[in-house]
Image (cartoon, rainbow over all chains, first blue to last red; front, top):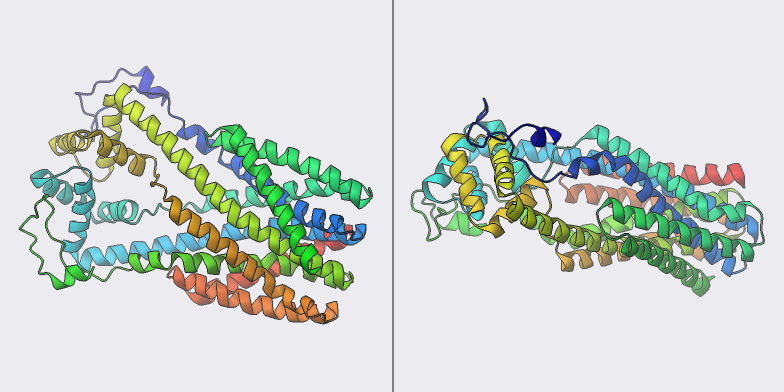
Length: 253
Length: 253
């Protein structure tokens, strides 16, 4: 990145491998986003983690349930939510990795069994972006000239599958689960501090609203979206989930 | 698809727009997957929806809580979970759509302000797949010759962003929420049928295990993965979440 602005760009003079040096451009933000990923997962987990413990305890408190079972159900849902979010994410990442390998093996096999068809599929993709005639044929030959690159191209551009990164997935699962556990404790603090359920409910609603507004805003900011919209969406999600919990419990309770 | 096997392939003879007819190949399964998407979302929602209502009611039943608050907390968590999953998915889809539009506007602007840099970025992507020299330069010019295609190319291949589909996102959110609500009711049936909590816990564990094995297996099959592995993973997730709920509630309850 900084390399581009410091070195003079010489678009006419190709480097050893045939790609000219990068001309100057805007500072790119992708790298910033990538380094923020664990923090985003933590914030995202915390925002998700607030919702169910708040909703369940609020519904029970509103229906006059005794303090002990309210606290127990809140702790149970916070813990189970954290484990199922973290572990669920890790398992989904493993499934995706297995799916990637299976699809990759299939593409490899098809490039051997149906080379003309797979060449045509490369051509169909490049054709969509304006390559025609001889240029199209030569580009297809250049890509299909190396089987690894050919299969890479099909995985990325036909199937839209990126190579999985197990270490990143593990970090992400941990951050999500940890964030969810921490977030889940926030709405429970008033009940833990042994206030009467009705008072605890008010304090819990306040803490949850503040947490959702703050975390929703931060999550939106980290994706380059307006923080206010993200904050209000998160608050609406918490509010509607709490109402659903109360209505379901009140209807059959 | 069937078009390919019925019409004779004439790789030498280009069609009007310059792309030759598709040579025969294997029957592709992508279209089958796509038509199964709502069903997969429903199954996936149901599998996710089983976990927390089971975990919370099992933890409370194991700790000797009375039947009424167990049932109330189970209903509350099932309802809040369904709303937060469905609504959360819909909101995430809206955020992604906004993110796509913002990034697209930025790419458009950069293609005007830094055309050489954006051309170079197209070249860097094609270079990775083996295009070199004149062929690389001509391919870049063909793509950058039309700004819409140029930006399409950058969105898809540099930023890995696909154009959002709001209708599909809405269907998916609905299917996930509905699945989650239906799944969440399964572990609660024994408690609803007014058995003693200890008996209801056993029946609920059996129903949950059967549900997780079946849904986990179907989910894996729908992704082309071994059903047995998916079934056992789903069961492990339910079991570990239930244990976490019980430990958290037992520790502080």
